[in-house]
Each structure stands twice: as structure tokens, then as C-alpha cells.
Length: 177
Length: 376
Image 1 (spheres, each protein chain N blue to C red):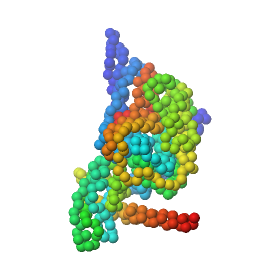
Image 2 (image 1 turned 45 degrees about the horizontal axis):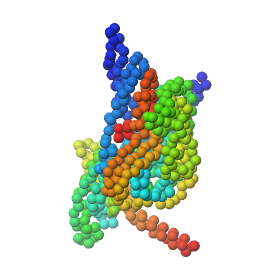
Image 3 (image 1 turned 135 degrees about the vertical axis):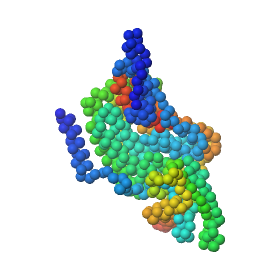
Image 4 (image 1 turned 90 degrees about the vertical axis):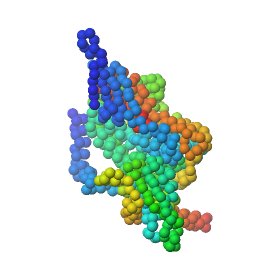
């Protein structure tokens, strides 16, 4: 009897909690907040300073991908010939089969040019067959969206900044000692 | 789902033994697992387990991947406790290379592994209650587990397939508000665990269904190679974290809970107690942790020297071991996994002999198997 009442109290408490603030998000209309580090589909970033992609199609991510879901080709960079860019080669085509991708983030880790990011894009329903095989243009669009949403700074620049800061700190602590 | 056929009929036309198929799509088998039960009325005469429905050839796939890619495969072995799997493979490669992991990385690994253990045990408590017929605890424990998973997502970027541990350290440092986040989650986890504990542990119906069911004595358990909570439920205090301390586990003060009778209730209660122990380990680790480097390797290509190594650690389900053979190239020559659930499952035949068919689900549930790891 006592146990029954105790058990009922749990139910009543949970019910009241649920009535006060419902926790269910009505999915297609309402989205849960995305964590800053969330790893969605990989996307290619855009270098706004020169107005070209960061990617030089060096194939490092493609060789390191555990599921072999990407492919790319490179071309001579026309902007370099005009003297606007320091990149000799630039990405010509890039294809990712998002259905094969396991979102492990290895491609981002091995990239030497800050060219690929794990975007916050995660919905893979499409209307046409093979619609998840995305090529360069949608990849860059996804990347631009991600850069805009998160105020993205290239990790190499961040590392330079923090490295300079650390050196500064070390110098001040040395002088202090 | 369940199909019956008469196996043997005596001269009077009475059925002596009936074969019943349970699974592979039965919800209580926790995955794609099939049991063939031979019943005499309500009594189980013998059982033949059929595994392999989820076989993906992980061990063979490891031979074709570079070392840093293999970690993604280990995520997918025991998909309830991914961090623990990543840890054991990273430790195997570190041992063969003779790498010293920075202290901060070790603490981060311990915290995440223990949180993962709590999340895994919470899932067990909920589904074990469900197996017995208690609907409420699963709501509470799933809420708690989801909080832990959200924390993992904030740290590693993925809810389940984290790919966060690296050979020689971890992928990236923790977010700035990590400590407040963890402390918040710890309190909530403790609340959820306590509530499920209060509802379930001394519940009369629960005890009636699980106490004295599926008893296995210590000697038999050791012969079958049971490890983890299944072995500790029989009263043997064996935990790899204590017996052969790895990482920084020797710096924490924690108990190894053991059971008395080796029945389903003991196996359940050992896990409940382990949740509290793990929470206390996390609190100690948070106090001891200090900033510092997080990786001994950096981004160099992993190319271990020739040789072989065996490394074991404590998974939520028992002792997971990795036997790794390296031929000096950037891919492993052979990776053999000693999966805890597979070895625990081997005792099923013994456990189910001469029990009631209604207890079969309870006994299977108390072993807490994960089919991704059993079949690999």
C-alpha cells in the first residue's frame, strides 16, 4: 500500500514537471540547438580575402578517409596567374558521397589548408536518387553557411594567435622571474 | 517472431519437447540474436544460441585501415560504450610504440570512460526493468543517459561515434566550460540513478522475478570466462582497473562492488553500485586534473615497430582485450578483440538449463550483451 502511494508520487511529480515545461521538440518545425563542436557533413570553406576556395585538391583527406567517400581533381589556379593568389593549384571538382560518410572528422584533422570543416548540416533526406552525392558547388555553399553561422576563423590563424600569446606570456613570466 | 514446431511425439501422440525460436527480431534480445529453446512445457531443457546476424568483419577491416582510421571501427564494436573501446585500442598502439601519454589526456580519458560506463549501466538498468515488466525506470534512465550523450556531443562532436581518443592522447582539448558542464550532468545522473534504484532495487515484484534466477556459482563463472559485473555478481572481486591498473586508475579511491549469490538480482545490483563508484571516480578526477599538453603524438603518421602486444581494460560489460600484431607498416597486421559480451554470452547455455521459459528473457537481459561486439 505504502509502496503504491510512493510509486504514484513519482508519477504525479513527473506529470507535473512535464506539464510545466514540455521537453519535446516538434521536430520539423522546431530544431534543438546544435553544439558548437557538432560534426555534421563535411563542407569546403571559402577564402573571402582572395575569393576562392581554400582547397587545393591535394588529396590528403581523400587518402585518409576510412570509407573512401570523396574524390577530387585539381587545376592550375587562374587567379595565381593574375597574381592575386599564392595558390598554384586549386580545386576543380570535388565530390562527397554523404551517404557513405561516417562523420568521423579525420578529413578535417589531416587538412593542411583549413579547407574542409565539419559543418552543422545533418539532414540527409533528398528528393532525387543519389541526391546526397554532392559536388563542389553545394559543398562550398554548405561551407559558406557554416562560416557565416559560426564566425569561423581558420584554425591555422587561431593557432598562430594563441602561439603568439603563449610566447608573450612566456616572455613576461621570464622577465618577471 | 516466435514459431513453434513439435520436435518429438511419443506413442500416445503427446508432445515431449517443443522447439521455440526466440529472435532474431525479438525486442528482448537487445539486438539481432536468436535463441533456439527446447521446451518441456514451461521448462527450458536446452538452448542453442545463434549469433552472427550483425557480423561486419571488423577485425578483418582493421587490417586494411591505417591506425588512426581503426579507431572509427572500434567505436562501432560496443556501440553503447564507445569511449571504452577507443581507449583499449589506443592503449594497445601506445604500448607497442612505448608512448607516454600526457597526464591531462589520461584524466580526460578516465572521465569520459567513466561517464560512458554510467551511461551504459543506466541503459542496462532501464532495459532490465523493461525485461521484467517495469515500464517506469526506463524513462528515468534514458533521460539520464541522454544527458551524458549530450555532454559527449558537446565534447567530441558526435553523440555516439565519437572518434575522440587518439594514439598518444586525445583529438582536441576540452571546451572551456567543461567542468561546470560535467558537474551539472553528474548531479542529474546521480538523481536519475538514485530514482531508478529506489523504484527498482527493493521492489517486491522485481525481487521475485530476479532473485534466485539464473544462478551461476563462482567456479563455473570463471570456467566460462565471465568478466565484469557478471563475474563480480558471483562474489569474485576482479576488476581490471584494480587488478592491473592502467591509465591513472591507481590514483583514485574506489570500491569494487561484489554480489553474493550470482543471480540476476546480484548482477543488476553490482551495476547500480558501479554507477555510484564511477560518479565518485569522475569527481576525484575533476579535482586532480590540471591543464597541460593533450597529445604525445601530434599529427605524425603512426608507424609502430614490429611486434605484438596484448592490452586489456575494463569495459562496462567486462574485460575487453586487444591483441595487436604490427609488421612495421602504417596498417595493423592483425587485430584480435577479446569481447566481454561474447564471453559472457557463452555461459547462456549453462544459465538457461532447467529454468522457466519466462525467466529466459530476464537471464539474457542480466548478461547485458551488445550484439555489435558479440558478432564484431
